[in-house]
Amino acid sequence: MALTDIDGGRLADNAFSLGKNLIINGAMQVAQRGTSSTASDYGTVDRFFTSFSGGAVTTTQESLTSGDPYDAGFRNFVRLTNTTTATGAASYRLLVQNIEAQNIANSGWNYASATSYVTLSFWIRSSVSQAFSVRLRSLDGTSQNYPMSTGSLTADTWTKVTKTIPGNSNITVNNDNGPGLRVEFGAFWGTDSTDSGVTLDSWAAYSSSTRTTDMTNTWAGTTNATFDITGVQLEVGSVATPFEHRSYGDELARCQRYYQVISQSSMFPGTSNGTTQISNIGIPLSRSMRAAPTTNSLQFVTWHGTSSGSNTTTTMTIAATDPSYSMYQGSVSGFTGLTDNRVAVITPNNQSFRLSAEL
Image (cartoon, rainbow, N blue to C red; front, side):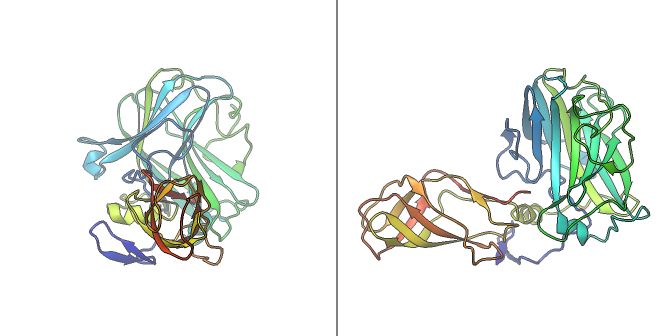
């Protein structure tokens, strides 16, 4: 299956390796879903999701124009805005990326050895002066947790943070397409999830009540406080190297393994099957996806055939015979007045076709 680069050229699916940075979209360039979201979910910059409980958070993709980290080659960052405060024991505000297990398993990091390292580096800024929580968590086998602190940040000042993390004999990472390692930036964790006895910079068995040390609620208790992140890099080795800047087209292709948007103006051929259904539809994807994707509910209109108009039901499913998930195949029903065995072309009705295979 071929890829379309930003220049309009074609790239093979295997035209690039993962590269040294195990984080995808660490420069926050790609935002297929949009530039603003109030959801506790994937909503703005690709591969990162916001998770929160209590109050409300708005996540946005923002632009850099000068200073640090602009001078280091970054033009975008992601922002969490604490639009409604929440400082309760069960409250939290997080920015998270889950990394595919086989990318960790084949990275060259001997994650089971305490003498083998990965290094996490990132730029961070807060409108409030305080320290924040950062965690790695292994997700296979018996989950292990590695909590860290940014150290105290100066309000409204970008700071580059670097953390070197050793392996641990208790870590398990499967060589598969499931989630293997989580990288989490915590603007706030309430006391239900923290404990003053937690040891920073050390692996321990994961527990939902001891994710990190107790955190101040200064940021969480400040209306419209902001929390900014960019330049996230996780690389094998004990030394942070310069950020691996990738082209927009390259980063977009990596993101499309997990999420794709097909334009509402796209047209898909099929064959009428009776009077109400168009079947044998094959929609080629920009890139093979990680797993069978879920899709948004759409209405379609026919452009050719014996009738036209909106349908009310979609029955499109990924083809079980396509292990690479590079073609979306199925049928669309709910039309009226079609003639059996006629060629028809359908298009989404004022909506984009969105496919998700996120971790």
